[in-house]
Image: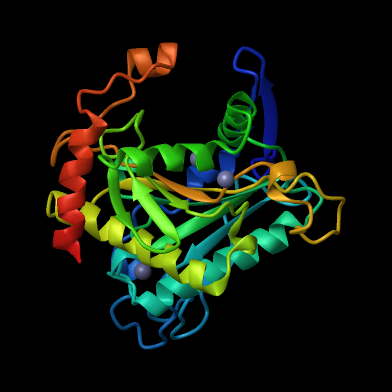
Length: 329
Ligand SMILES: [Zn+2]
Ligand SMILES: [Zn+2]
Ligand SMILES: [Zn+2]
């Protein structure tokens, strides 16, 4: 691997999974000052948040939502894709503080990227995510998320498909029914979406935001559902920030159906049916905090044996989080 721009996949036999080597990423911008933020708009006068005389990644003086190829990709054609989605030109905003219309527009952007990347023959799984906070390795503070188009179906979605097979139907549908029936871990709900701490959460404040109806992906959601999804996600994130009265770090992971089942060039067809493709749109949040200052480290048992040991019961963290969501609204 003398060519540092080359991306290499190697199969890890012991884990039965791919590992991706993208060594050029070592050189990527690391926590620049706001003056040098590459995700701010390019402001010729170099006002706060812009760079005098130098372009940022976004060569316009103002924007709403911007999507572009990651300059330091972990995947690229003809083996996948890596994109950056900038939520706003306001450096100091966050997903939770976006205007509701902007958050709703973001759902449509995600949907469009899922459709376009998912239609590519070299993309088998479209993964939309956000890392927030230095605790989860964020290198740029400007509010943004990312999209990876994996050239294979990665392990976590594969495990979820195995759960469908084990339960003899859609796992998120059946888990959601259980949470609604129990009720103790439900955090927030509207007509289309339910947020809850899962019964067997691995992280103290883990939460899942699940479509009530079976929707394989954002493409199957109607406009009302997309609006409700944005609303529920924002309510949860504002609740997280209210929980310890500080910006709350998390990984936000959007799980949808793989995009493998279609022939190349076909649109991600609704007709293929969710049952055939597997997958039920839901958003998982993995926050690393267990108290305002203490981090939960995946350590010996978690890394070496794969078993999470938690010192917080999901019912208890759900009660705290539910109150925080009320405070955050
Ligand atoms: Zn910025
Ligand atoms: Zn389902
Ligand atoms: Zn999931």
